[in-house]
Image 1: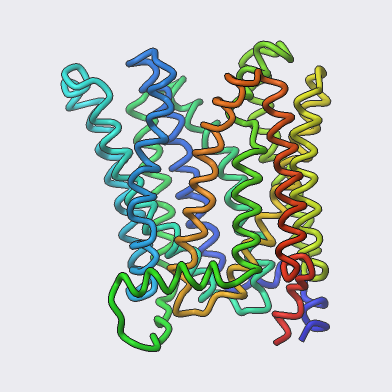
Image 2 (image 1 turned 30 degrees about the vertical axis):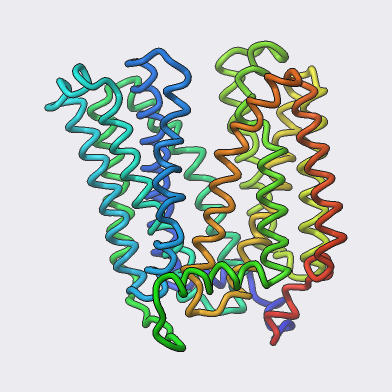
Length: 419
């Protein structure tokens, strides 16, 4: 099988009609969500003029997400995943409509309650996300054959990163030129387009469950499966701690203002640089998926990410810093592709939702807590030492993972695919 896999082109998986619809759907929904995040952020800051309020937006969403994510994974393993995706995306659409009405017909609520109604709506999007994240991952594994998992993960990553770059730009431009009402209308349109493509995907049968069990036993089974599998837990832990300690994105405004002195325009380029690197790496991996020496490549790229953060901290040149951030995005994307493929290959069909929810919790918590850790470390240690410390901690975590998770270090994804 491996020989036939090598002869496949990177575009074979894109010939699967349902996977095409899936990529289109996720692309448009992601653009809408990213647009909404920029619009909400600008709206909240205009109302409050308080930077802490911006942090509360993310906190409002992640609170509901973390509270319900495991339950969402359980539901994704017992309920039709396509229907669950449609319901979740429609919930995003309703939240967008609520935000639209809040700034048009019900603006008096903002005058009376401030930004609290916005936070409540964002809290609801976190609930939608807690069901959408595991059901999407589990559903994609039903759409493509096992030997195409690495390719599907790569194209899925390309779609997400392109949308994550273009979405905020589109949202900001529409807000700036046409106002907040038309901006929210545009978000709703993008989400509806994504919903339409999800509806075009054929319904997939749910995998048979071995036995009936209580919800708490089901959740425990999913968690235990992850933590008993050295390869999965090693990949998730390394990715989580690398983002937790190594991410400097939250501190980019300070670098742009005080260190590189490039203003808001330069900050925009710095924020986009990691995503550009991710897209470049995704396109490369579409042709050369990391199926051989997968674990070693994963560890090397995580070490490269930590080293990139250290180099970025000591750089005083804007263009050098830009190149370093592009490299960090390339290293990070390699880890995302390997981790996603590991989860797809090693997870049984009847547990995909629960394992995907644990994966989402690892990644989401590391992003949110990483921003908090970066800010706290910068306050206690000063800016540059804190980023160097974070990058060094990432290198330490890579070394510890390599030592204590030898199965991950020796992993060849091609061997598992050939079984």
